[in-house]
Length: 268
Image 1 (cartoon, rainbow, N blue to C red):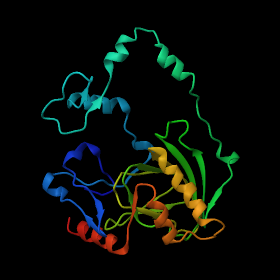
Image 2: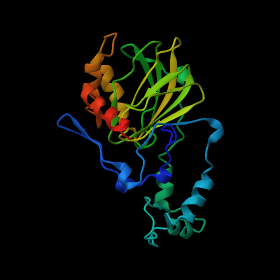
Image 3: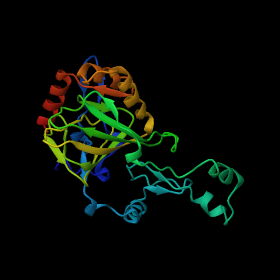
Image 4: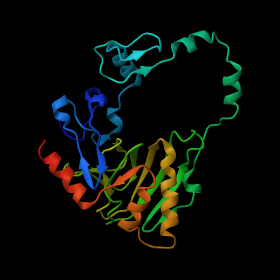
């Protein structure tokens, strides 16, 4: 299977062995003996999106959707998607007071990047488009500018959040140890799941800009903390980068850890 095209439909999370940092070593379970595939960086173009209703039909037909009352089929090995149909059906056209009151505290969020000044992270720039306050920190959105011929962050993986990168200008190269690299340009989307080692760089001649989505959105504090650590400095160093990542449920990789990942994937 091409590492760029991971599909969750063939991934059994309950059979996945954890990827963890332990005494400077990486412990990677042998997913192949469970007939499952490890997470992949995934790139999507606008012309190959999957319709939501198709996904729902597939879930229903494979007995992986429940109304919260009926048990899932014992033959299913996929995580359940719980639809609280009873609550929806019992509303009978009337909005309950709790929902009505809560909805009054909400508003549609809006950000105009041109009105938000760039903030510096050494040689890089960023600005916060959604800081999580609109979504109770379920989602934050960052816009990042990567100058040409820059290395980007150190290799790392996240323990608690997934990332999306939607390219709007230039090209960015995404790396994962032992898997080569992937170049993404304007209009393309790259997704990076939890625990997939990765980094990105801009080895090209033009600056690159992308929209970075992070779920859940607590990782927005990483950017602010990193900005504080760098201060007036003009360069983000690997040492500062690694120290900041460790504060936010993220494992930065040493050269030895990267080599271990490369050796494991070379044997697949």
